[in-house]
Length: 282
Image (cartoon, rainbow, N blue to C red; front, side, top):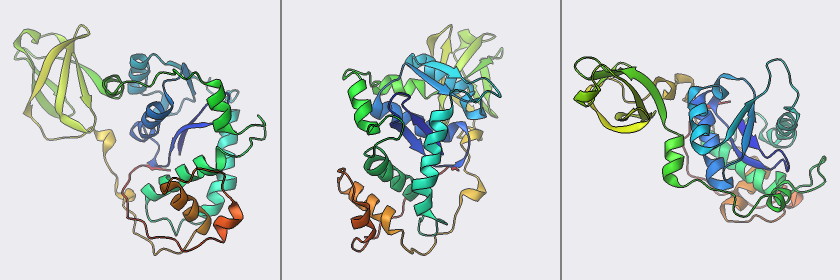
């Protein structure tokens, strides 16, 4: 699971369960956090490979976020997120059990969001003595910047530097593209959505320099976005999880008040949810 929490309040800014621990799945948790809670002054991360990827450095620079990494071998400063993960294990995963009643990753994330908003955020935190979401709201300026769509899109584009050939061709992950003739022999920055290598923007000296025209294309997505075979999971027969199912049903219908655990556990029948699709890895 990837999770981002507010240092002051312990409120969850964004979180996502995934099948794989990589940059693509980390971005799937980070982007909604920015869209919903706004742009923080800084983020504090460990040195795992998703958190030292060149894309993250670029994205934080675009958004004006200070990127801070913990020192290798020094756990100081990571206690709050580790405490949150322990709470997830003790209060959420204990209800999940063996996971037999969860059809797919999309449902796992839906139930987790419901638990976060109706249980974790509304409960008094043992260290702060306050409800996380209320503490966050009181301490957060009302004008906290939520990035506009164009800026957010730019932050989540990837880029790679290439040198154009004498015939103004550049290569990117096995594909060839034609750039403007005046760029022949020059170094250019190729900017792209990792899920769409059919459209590549060209920058030269930090300025727009047109679009790279596909010449020979055999790959349409960045290799890091590939869905691996073990992401295909058989759909188990539904068996229950009354507590989490009730949380999810209440969340879906807009009930965000304090949840009565006993009434949820003893609640009525669960409606069948439409199967959702997702990707990633725990």
